[in-house]
Amino acid sequence: MNIQAVGIIRQRGQLTIPDKIREAFDWLTPSSAVTITSQKPDEIIIRPASTSKNTVDWDKMWSLIKKSRAIKAKGRGSAAEFIKKDRYSH
View (cartoon, rainbow, N blue to C red):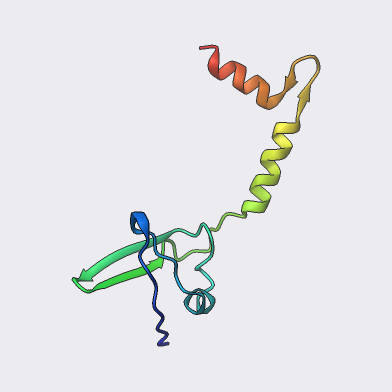
């Protein structure tokens, strides 16, 4: 596969990978971890950080976080309030 596109390096070294490149690879998704290596002075290689499909379902993760924050204990408020009080009382 030979796909070529132009990107611009922005402030703090940020690079947006062009749409046609991202669309060609299912592992190039928001929040995906990648390894970046250089073997030659004029070459940068970007690969998925893991070859296994151990991806995080962020929608599910945030749903579980919201559920845990909503837990109420009798007379003690929410779980989040309990953790906050516990964390700052030491």
